[in-house]
Length: 470
Image (tube, rainbow, N blue to C red):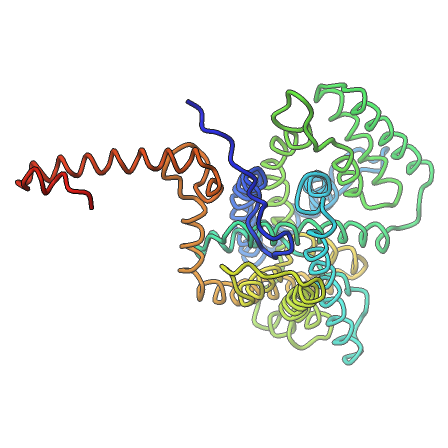
């Protein structure tokens, strides 16, 4: 007989911070992060491969990265590196758009009270690194153009670090990290759209907007078929690129248009279904290829030394390592204090600081913004990329140390979350208020007790002693 549905697991205080997730949200989170973790490992491999390639066979690396391909008549005669940054990352931002839409309508951001704390934390986690960068460059007479570089968090790379160090976070901390990354992506998109838009081509922009309207109408009419949407998406992307607005905006715009709520008879919404199909392409192909053609910078002793001596690069490193950790932790603490949100008693504030430090890994979007901010200076662009790599590495090491200090506590919490003694497919922690669960457990224990009494008799115990209740 099928097990009854779990009771409402949100009976805990709604004002509790990092409390237990609902069961559907936990399952969605596990599926999403599983793909991102694999993608993060591939991203890490691609970054290392880029560094090795660029520092051993720099001539061939530059030749491949700068090789141009594409129809010049359509304004798309781009280098391989350019295709990776503007083309493949549009897939990444398409998935980010779906994630954001889902969070807003069905996830942790749908309730303004619950969303306030992670949103404030994410905003502070972007503002503080920018302020650190501005302060360092104001004191050192550096360029202010790179203020946005250390503001981004790379969720895939962060999860790859967790996989490498063998640490599994409780679902509440993983959800907090993912929510931070989603809000972070939203504001990174706004920064790219507002501050890195070149001279506008209004004809191309009008065509892109018309394409987006058609995309939306087809979705509303329920039209299905990849052969309709993929060609239309490519046209929208090409028009957006030629409009002067960064082409990744096309990806996130289409992602936000997908419906992410279920209707009668649907097990998954169209947005979740498409995200499930596209996320492996984004995490396993698009982002690693972007890293391969963006992370190849010189890592000689002199280059590493320059990272810590020049105001632009030092601002990036300190923004990622110090600004991110202080901003997210400080914003979280202040928001919790003023909203009187209680921290989950199973966790502690050092756990929040460890996750905030992990958010200092700002690889993919930071590299992209670095390329946009210093597009006219190839040497400085490479130095900023080296700073992003160094800052992300330091943040990863710091977070790894902090997380390892609490690894036993995390292991016990994860084990409790996943325990399913009645084997009904629902973790026991979600059935504590379900009478049917306790009846099933009573039957299981009674069967085990009978089995042990039988074993006691076989071992030679007197029958009256073997039958005696414990």
